[in-house]
Length: 71
Image (cartoon, rainbow, N blue to C red):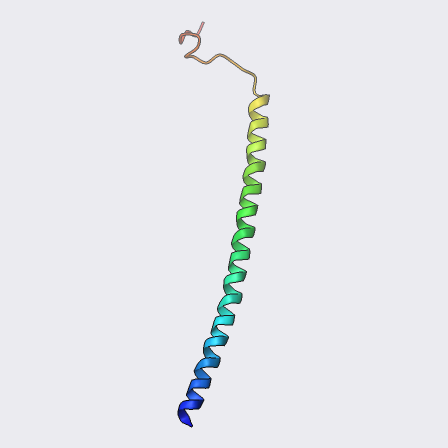
């Protein structure tokens, strides 16, 4: 009788632990996916802003293009 109770207790504990672990892992994967989406969104926004800034900068010759002469 003691073995039967221990067996059922172990079975219940294992199934409950498995269910809790599944919920926790599912929640973690949802958070990870959300974080990855937010990072991609922010990176795309930053990339757009940088390319807009680069297109607004007037093209000036650099010192390597004019031979390094100042005057």
